[in-house]
Image 1 (spheres, rainbow, N blue to C red):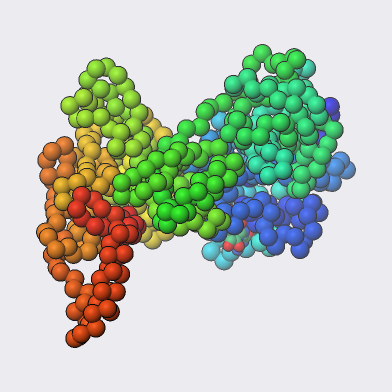
Image 2 (cartoon, helix red, strand yellow; image 1 turned 180 degrees about the horizontal axis):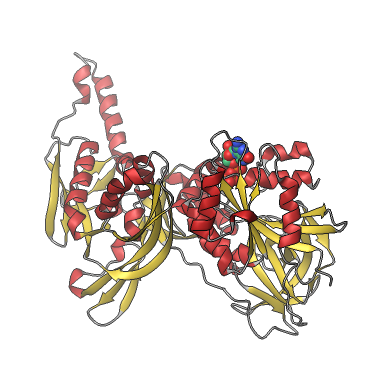
Length: 598
Ligand code: GDP
């Protein structure tokens, strides 16, 4: 199979540096899609992605480009997810390419994710074509960008192409560079098929559709294939390429990028990074870099209306079909009823899934505090993993609790460094290194507990730096920490939805905040109710619910007894709907209010 006239490449960039706009320009220039279709930005097919300016799913596209040298090239553009939560997926899409366009917004310069993505591309041995984008902007600072390219990424400034996806500057130059600079597809001269799975999507009629980059041998209809990670066998029903619409072809040869439909119905059986080979003549080794993706952040998701449980379950099952990294399992909570314990790659992944459940499936949900996966070393020598505070063993059985950390690279303007360092300290982190980025910004390398960045770290970083700060992170190691389980008691009874694993130094503050919120939200009762935060048997904070008698009949002056009775009946009805924690009645939405407020 001839591969000389093919190029596989991707575009990598910090969010908002113009990847989508530039991709569209390339499709338009090569007449891959008609101009009018472009309005709905092709590569980002999910609404939510578009709104947030991030790409979650990678959709490869095949274009044909008649180059100046007289040859027409087949260009396969792979889209990569643009956020740290998805860095493994990014690395797999990159592994399917030989080159990458590295976009830098001319007005913003190099950002945290520009550096992180450039490193991922280098690790895969890709040819990097630097593109300074948005040069039409009056605020563009070309000199600074070129300097940063050399200083921060060690890429010679003369390699940079100046472009604007918006006004169409430099598009042809980019396509020429793809053809000239990026090598034709690597493939090993072996007849054993090795094909990299870099993504999959679910189609209601055909089941799982696997995205492949073939490295050697070929894959065609009716082949009996073998997934090398777990030895699953399957029969190929169809192979094809994306133009961008899927188009059937006879076979995917060496260097080809395309899709495969086989008789695997469950997308969870298809693992990104896996190698596919022929069952009859299997390859000796998998392609390098396969890793099992494991959720890092867990949280309970419950329907606000109990009757939505089945609908929620169905929508989660559907979401999982297109996102094998998302996991869920039924659980129940005294306070919130029946729901699910869900696992996510990171916080952004969690937000996206929650938004999609609300928006695409119309289910109103409430989620509990996110938790990371702790490793607990017990006195008896056993080590267990805990992702839900309720499963933490009794303190007397625990030797050490270890928590996951991250290594973060934070880009901050010089004048905000003090405030950011204070934030890092507050979050129990430490700053290991500082580097100057240019005259105006610094890069801080910090180690932080993953748990501490879950809630508001990024928002606070953005607000302290007036939007100029940016961060990327990778997972670090597990470290021992002084962690304890904190329970919230209402009138002496624990409320499971509010249990959390906290650092001992923070228990008092966090406990106090929760108690006062809950005490405000629980309606007054006839008797005094204490809301307490407890660690083991020890109370670390408390607050009281107001005491009051609500006499609903007070408004009915005088005699109408039947009306009075009706009102009392109604009040009883209302009470029935309340959740009872011990002898305290709490309206279900009280829990929701407390969890939402945070
Ligand atoms: P992505 O997040 O990297 O995919 O970025 P988008 O392509 O969605 O662009 C982000 C924002 O920058 C949008 O508001 C675009 O209209 C704008 N933009 C993209 N390319 C250019 C450009 O070349 N010049 C200017 N002035 N704006 C651009």
